[in-house]
Amino acid sequence: MKEDFLHYIWQHQYFDKTHLSTTAGEPVQMLRTGFYNTDAGPDFKEALLQIGEVEWSGSVEVHLKASDWYCHQHQQDLKYDQVVLHVVWEADKPVLHIDGTPVPTLELKGRINLALLHTYEQLQQSRHAVPCAPFWPSINEITKTMMLERALVERLEARGEEVLKFYTTGGNDWEQAAYGVLLRGFGFKTNQQAFELLAKALPLTVVRRHRHNLLQVEALLLGQAGFLTAPEDDYTLQLQKEYNFLSHKYGLQPNALQRHQWNFLRMRPANFPTLRLAQLAALLHRYQSLFSGIVEADSIKQYEALFRVPVSGYWQEHYMPGRSAKVVQQSMGIGSAHNLIINVAVPLLAAYAIHNGNKLYLDKAVSLLELVKEETNKVTRLYEELGWKTKNAAGSQAALGLYKYYCQPVNCMRCAIGNKIMKQNSATA
Ligand code: SF4
Image (tube, rainbow, N blue to C red; front, top):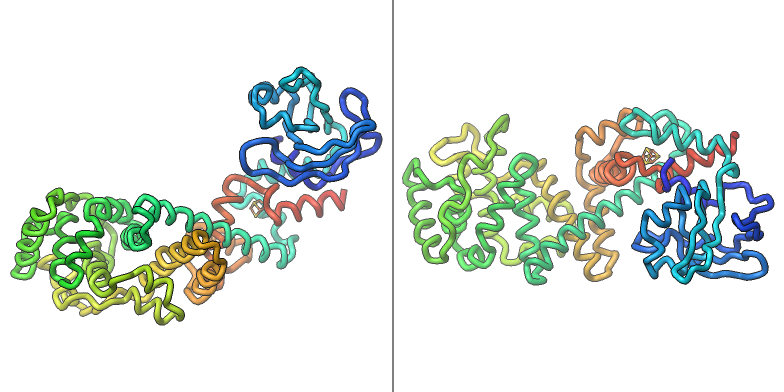
């Protein structure tokens, strides 16, 4: 058993309250259980209880053993001086406040429906990738949908918070944030780290100064990425000359990345990082304010067009310096554009919503995801095997959120589906 089970039991008051009393023998009556606290400090705040003749307002702390109070050093922590009830599975030791007065303690052992405990253990010890898989068919669609919606919002908020780090480290500049997120997004799965290094090696301020000249933007990106060390033809020779001039002018670390840091393995030429860099150059060349473009676009077509900027003539016919492409491709494919909508536009919208406290941008992010094709990966397949098929990227992002924050860490007691399973099983006990 873990503490999360006792949190759940306390929160839902799923225990036998007959002749309830503290370990000191004083009768206990619950008037308000308090709200679950996810920050530092006691587990439940603003509880209201009657212990003996006195009504107490304060916090409730939950532990498996009473002695955990000392293991966690609460006796020295003023935050825990507000605790009015210590709820434990086993009261193995008397516990005192800082001033030496006893902390009223309630022992739950023997008061919990064993069927609940059994269900909890089934979830905790499950060998399934989604631990509740055996129970899944018994859960109604409304509960699943509600939980997935919650997981989606939590995922978007978490992704928004990540973007806010780019925003603050970039001097509270949304264009800096967009640049960081965009470059990471352009790495897709296989070259994310290299693109992140490139974002550090090539300041946006330098790119901005040469934004109007596509050749120079290409030179900066490909040069810093390490692809212009041995020119293959007239065009790449021209790029190299530009790069040598600009890197010297701005004191850039020459060829900050090396070719070997880029992954080309098992990749179609259309996804080669060299072509991605050319697409990125076209995008940075096109938009003075990419961030405004992302915030202001208001249809899926506009978002697709935003990322599908035609590359320069050379890159329409080449996928690497000196290597001709068999098929002329003006801009990235629709699937890649959708990937950037999911991994660049949506997190930026979420960050903007959090920063401004404006939920409309979060709604916009969700609506956008609903118009984008779902992602297929090992996580979405897990839920698909349970019969839950994602219909769009909102669904696949929800699945990723549910898995990461709930199913993988077996956080079933904080999950609406897990709560339903527990409730159903306590009702049938
Ligand atoms: S967290 Fe929720 S969905 Fe995931 S296994 Fe537990 S009960 Fe099921």
